[in-house]
Length: 187
Image (cartoon, rainbow, N blue to C red):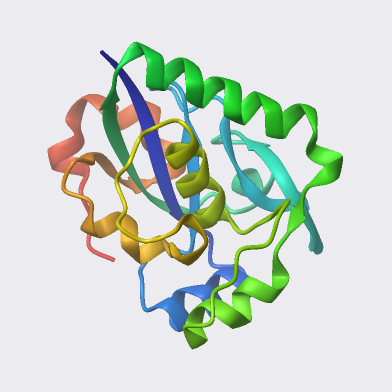
């Protein structure tokens, strides 16, 4: 068995503030990582940390890019045990999107459709939660009872198989990883 990591964040940017308030969740962004140190995390988000207009497939790191600009980013880090086949399949699926990243784009329309319960599957287009859910589904890691394109950040709170590993400042994740219980904070 291996572990993968689901990382939920709230940066406090205008877009994350809007998503947080529309979806009624304390976290607005979801990423996935193949290792405990969360290097890298994969998602769909800003291609340039200073310009929110351009978005797509991104490889994120704790103290780089947007997270470097937003050191007070709050996070929740969950782990999920998967078998070797699922782990390798997930790696292959993420690598495929990474290799073909120019074919993919951020699904801006989903930001409007999903809160109105009018989600729609759009090929080669993702928002962060759809991407993570779809990568899991394509890797035979079935944690949701709804299609990947309907998944919102809030849905990750409801998954019993996800184990909460850490909650607090993302920039302090590695530093405080060993004392997770003491570092839990209210949002």
